Amino acid sequence: MSIRPTGAEDVHWDLTHLYEDESALRMDLTALYDAASRFSETWRGRISDLGASQLKIAITEYEQLQERSGRAMTYAYLHWATATHDPDCGALLQYVRETCTKVGKVLLFFGLEWVKVDDAQAEALMKEESLAGYRHFLECERLFKDHTLSEPEEQVLAETQVTGKSAWMRYFTETTSRMRFTLRGEELSQEHILAKLHGQDRELRKEAADSFTEGLAAKEHTLTYIFNTILADKAATDRMRSLPHWLRARNISNEISDETAEALIAAVVSRYDLVARFYDLKSRILGLSPLYDYDRYAPIGESEAYYTWDSAKQITLEGYGEFHPLLGQIAKRFFEEKWIDAPVKDGKQGGAFSHGAVPSAHPYVLLNYTGRARDVQTLAHELGHGVHQFLSRDQGYLQASTPLTTAETASVFGEMLIFQRLLAEESDPRHVLALLISKIGDTMATVFRQIAMNRFEVEIHAARRNHGELSADTFAEYWTSTQSAMFGGSVTLTDNYRRWWSYIPHFLHTPGYVYAYAFGELLVLALYARYLESPDAFPGQYIRLMRAGGSDWPHTLVGRMDVDLQDPAFWHKGLNAIETLIKRAETVYTECEQTSS
Image (cartoon, rainbow, N blue to C red; front, side, top):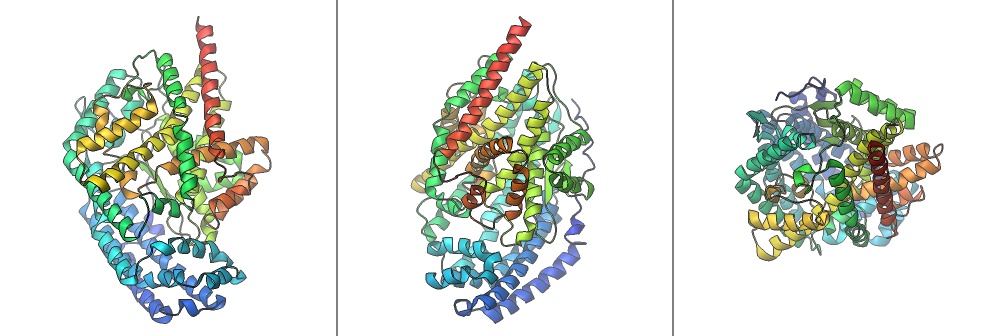
């Protein structure tokens, strides 16, 4: 059972765009600390007395220092992400984290002094034309006004973060990246073993699920301990910051109200019936009853689609370019200028991401490409992030990044473009059905599964705070109950599946992250509907949205495209669009059955 080559084996990124080598990085960090110290000597204790012109000078210098720190962290993290098993890469990452923490401590006063500025004075300053390029950053800094500690306390928290949560996350990533799973005599990485769940062979899917579970079981104590430690760290931090509940910090960072987040979550939970409806349909198509958890991603059709790296590249670039030439041009640079690291290899971090790096450089995309149809969608997804990050660079380091909620917009929209392109080219109902089932399956994972995982997070954060350290069985019980509620009996969960909470990194590195996926998917369904209504005008509006980055409130930016994020009914429009896709799949399946009979 050899691993099939894809053509992505030699697709690696070039980090010299950030630094020529490690010595250049170390020299820059030394100079950065000296520059940060001079900044502190110049501006400490003065922020509340500054007029607009002086504040702009200070914040411009502050931004430049933060960007230099971000560049160093990007280089060290990306260097380590493709070689988590290399102790030298780990040591460099730790050195950079510790040094950047020292720099951050020196610069900490700036934000603390700004949030203490009188409200009326701050409002007047933020209305000044000279500060227009920093207005939203200054607004967002003040969102944490009631949850900010004294400077010595903030410095302690920053210092202990390096040996606290950050250290545990690194340990989690290195542990899961090094895990190997035995399948039919072959040792496979997490990426390769999970890829087997998307195959035609049901017995192989079951064996892959068994093997993956055995691997998780072997690390059960370690993974459970890491989860407990990070949950406790989050509880302590929230308590010190007087945050009312575990999700409040994430909602503030996402620039949405608790009410908006709750409305989204409640809307999705209220339509769990769509999950059961979809998997009941898939069960009928596959002729499998019951449908087990390891059957969820089984493809339909006679053959398994396989895509070489070149074909995935062509599909993605054509889809992006047809929507708007600029998107295609930017996406092409990722391939031509070595901004992507694509192959699966020992020690490489699992999954996929696009790292925005810094405005003075460019984004980088990490993939673990195995040639599946899902990998083509992942490429389109991460390039969506990358193009968005590239376009928003003009906003500067402090306002280029978006909150997680709207950060998923471009990525999910990119997937939608590729899906619709593939769908339009198909005339065979059986192939159309296969595409629809694949897309709806991804939507189930992006919307409903992520909200079910949010429900899991609610349970474990409350239990850890109220009852202390949790056992692996307790985690498993919460995982099973919240997943079962979503499936509504349409998928039979095996005992193996009880352990599958333990490998998901989002729960650890960004608590509360997961609802952002549902937010992004439902938002994209609304935006795509606007595109179909105005195919000539929409692409230009979309480019302007991408260029805006994080320069304004999310509801304001998408409001310019006639989308109202603050309307609770908005989420149901997206859910109704999902129902329409399921109805179409049901209709096509009926047509296929009638044709075959």
